[in-house]
Length: 230
Image (cartoon, rainbow, N blue to C red; front, side, top):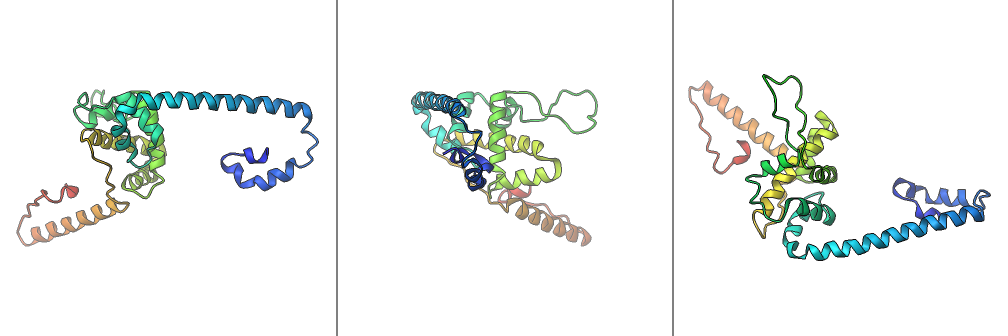
């Protein structure tokens, strides 16, 4: 029974835990009584969490549509959607753009500088609860085979995971703003190969522009149907 209480990576060693605990002399009746009290406390806390969760669900019933919109994004679950809606509200009219919402959460670079900036910009401070939400959802999205997952991994390779989490948090809040600004919409993934395809398109455009320049012509691209190369 004790071995089955293992969590995370320890669950891979359940058989070893069972062997270690079998007939263990240190597991005295006094220790068993202490562990029983600890487990009872955990059960009590879990019961309280369940009761409060039911209250939260009732309070958020009018915003079920917004919750489902947020949940449709990669890395987002019920809890993160509830926390985000509680912090931002269901209406996005208070934020003119997704960038304003990202700024509110502190997921944009600092802009209070005098003269040219030396080094990389730090993230500004903002709503710490929104920042915490996107910190978790960004890491979760980074493990998915989606456009957002690809973005997280691309940035993490170059600049590290913390900056990748901030950058993807910025993207997620802009998507969140767009979704909640359009009732009935859901997240539509652009694909894990989105950046590879965009880079290929840009290379082709540059090659055509170079060739046209060599022939004495100037190409003027029409970006109406191809905004991804803008």
